Amino acid sequence: LDCIISTTSNGRIVDFNPAAEAFFGYSKEQAQARIKIEHLLPDYSQLVYRTLVQKHLQKNGLSPRHETLAIDRQGDKYTVSLAISQLESDGELITTAMLHDISERKRYEDELRLASTVFNFCNEGIIISDENNVIQAVNPSFSHITGFKAEDVVGRNPNILNSSTHDEAFYEQMWQNINDKGRWQGEVINKRKDGRTYSEWLSICAVGDSDSNKAKNYVAIFSDISKRKAAEEKIWWQAHYDALTQLPNRAMFMAELHKKIDADQPLSLLFIDLDGFKAVNDTLGHNSGDDVLRCVAQRLKNALPGDSLIARLGGDEFTIILNGQSQPEDLHTLSRSLIDKLSAPYELDGDNARLSASIGIARYPDNGIDIDELINLADKMMYEVKTQGKSDVRIA
Image (cartoon, helix red, strand yellow):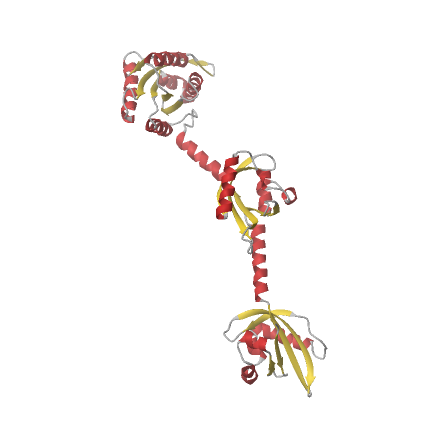
């Protein structure tokens, strides 16, 4: 209901309806006795009121409504729409102000405006779909991340982004969480319009119907984490791989060895030291030495089973983890084959380099169950070979 307040030309209140009493907190008698219209309006609103009065002088009917503020007895301010009408009564001009509280509507409009701003300007992609998971709206960041325009996807299912990376069980679990808890979040690998895959951090929530408590909409918010993932993977790779040979480094070797022994998996541990590598570095230079190390890494990869782990510990030292229980004679045959392959000439920009290898081997669990003991034993076997002629293998 409108608050209706009638005043004389000097601002004295002559009528104050029940809606005005409830809204402002004054009784009609209080308003008539000691309140003027200006007391009910903050400074700017008083100007709006006076302007309306001046513009509407000598006019019939109701003025256009204007949005302004009103203040109640407690000092709380509310947004109202204000209109006035004027008439003469016993030779006196009476101005009647009609105020309607629009605070809730304004609050709702402000919330909508804020939501629209967030929707349109946030960096995360947003998808709004209906109860059947049919896309109703997407924001500009969605298009920026995926390459799909709104018209490409509205009316379609979000599985247009499916990269086929995840199996059906993954999505079943996702929707089970959404249906049970109303939300889900996690990492998903999706597909852009051009077919390239990307990693995203995705949060989905169900928006329920207040009457039925069933999902009326689904809101998905996601951010492209591809660059962050790539940076993390690069850091991880640098910490676990040798930049020169692209082989696992000492840290990776130790981690894998611990993992296999903790799982009680039989294995053979080979320590390889190159014979004659220092001479290559001294005579042909460090660049040639680096080329030799890369060639050694490739020859080892080509000669060993695919499930073997080959690592460079540093300098000209390499290690190999062979999976499974191997007999000494088989290890001897394999090691002699490796020595032959590593002894073949290395062609380096017109120069030929030659070297060989000394190999020491320890086996788990035959030679012990302690990692340090196994490593020291394989290392000891290798150095025994080096001190007794090199280019050979010794098995503990």
